[in-house]
Length: 367
Image 1 (cartoon, rainbow, N blue to C red):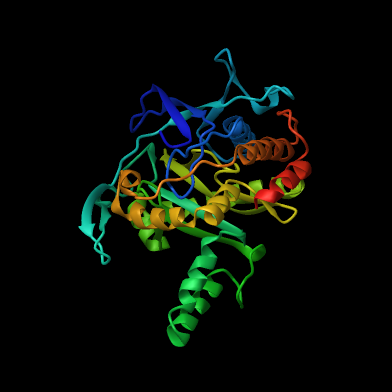
Image 2 (image 1 turned 45 degrees about the horizontal axis):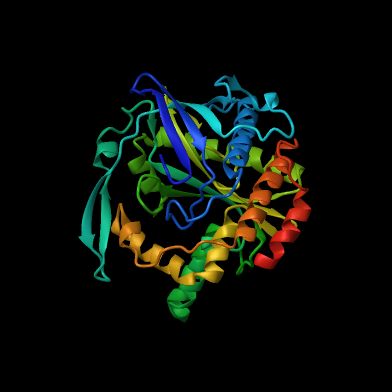
């Protein structure tokens, strides 16, 4: 299925009939859309599966529909988060309802820099607007509550400053206004209210879209599309409230959705340390930590990824810079971060790991 989750299809999905599948959450990780990185992080997959199950069950309590059916025990039975026993490492397999995936058609063009760039044709979704059922909406819905270190907002601000005093100031004003701010933010600042953005889902790199363009390629009528941001904000509120309750700051995250029987259904996973960025006492507790490690120790890798992912599927084989392995002690500490962070967020000691505060101290030398 992807670089960090494997998908087993138990029953095929059709337009009027959901399928059944199982996610196996691996200990692999990915940064900068690269895919499988050189190292594995022990129990990372189990920590993410447990967090995702906890969040899905919280969403159900609030009346929000999801494709989640349950975790899968070692003997193949479906179980709930409440069935998990402390100290037994949870489960890394989740059963879900499946939907049909329609993909946009790619075509290669020559970019301004002479490198090949892929353009995607969504005419199928436009022509079928309002007529599709039980399908994956080809969007990621991004919500921002704050601006942690590594937020793309800071990159946009720096790029705007290079445009010159007139054009740059105009762009900066637009950025600040879109975030509800009056002046330049600092890393770690929280926003006055959550801000919603849309990106593509089924392209090698996430391409930012206007709300209008997101609606056009969604396959939904405008009135149906209005349900999408409403559902995403409800998800954000539930995760943010649990984060606050357990000592975290919920900076940002993403939601993916199916459209089934005229309703939005939350899919993939939500509110984990890979999908969202959390803070704890001023430090990052999420995959963002690994991104920052590569930014610091192999900056050329990020630069080449940003360039080559525009060239379409298989760009990793063409990229001249490959990721390096990480320090084994760092990998061990990151494993502890995932497990300890999960324990704290779900308020249950699923994993035999130290308290999160101690783990974050062990990560400090690597920051």
